[in-house]
Image (cartoon, rainbow, N blue to C red):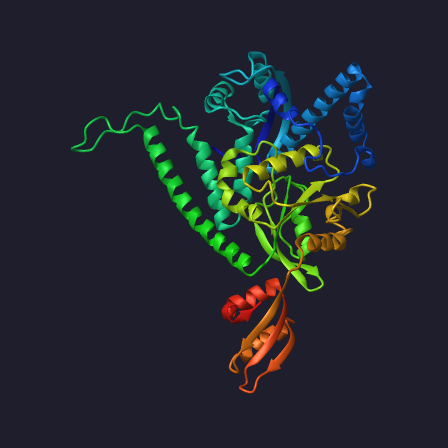
Length: 480
């Protein structure tokens, strides 16, 4: 396992803006990728948002104004990335000593930063007595080792920080397996020359050669552990696939909550389901997927899944490791894309989320945009229909409950019918099953034949029906 910072450690943060990073972050235009209209920045009464609105809308005012607007927009995006980096450190339980910023045309191949910036970091360490240095960009294994040799403290990059947060948050068995797999895959790239101070191990009796180095031993043990984890996760994946297949057979609709981390997905999940899963105002507050029944009103229901939040430049090790968990998203009938309406970078966050969804094969799953946290603005709860008449965006507050009833109606409308109808014929000795169906309000009519056989006209909620049908194995006796 890579070296983890202790929760109480004092951290010095370093964020260097490079040309490569600027090109990557400026490649996508700041527009809603789904083509849906959503609140203008001026509606939020935020000076920063108003400045961003000016920056975006002034492109037609002339080349000089457009150039200034483009520069202002880049500054705002850079500030947002640095603020998110600090929030990641706090979410990991670290204390932030200071933030050192800089700009380079391209990273130095040996140390990522130049000599002058390295001296600045070294001086800051002497003043703050920080115990760990965190870089806001991805470092190569050699850059990480060289920096540690120069600074004499632990050095971690952004990916290592995110992996550490995931390790702290994972609670379920499969969640811990997935995080450990991601950590080991990350560590495998950092074993190069990590043990060159150790001599080769001697070969045993009858063995030729000097034996394997400590590095080779570590790599072999790591690969064996990765193999075991993949086998266990394969078993978890098969179990999940069985559950999804059963839901698909019985016609149960699945709704998955997706969105950028800290957009309020878990709070909305609790509001929709009257549950009490952990939620907090921090990045990656919850990792493990949670499935619950969603009551849509009018006798309809579905299954709703609370999934892990996404983040810009999510480490590919985590995407690969959590692919089985994210399958709940890919197989959903509807994605409720939760957006923080007061986030100044909300449009870009939507782009990042949609890119991750596309990478896991969920890019074509229908979406319903939900703009959350309107209680922090002057906006009122409302729905916005598409040209086809179906709701494509909703404004709600998961904290106060404003707009939740309308959101449930919108979800029900997007899913269509969630009722199971048909006829079930029961022999006289199936009284317990008959009582369960009546208790679930699943029977609309009943006819008794001369031989005592009962014909029940079923009009049941799809989730209730799936539970009863699975318990009594009655699919073969049911006529739709």
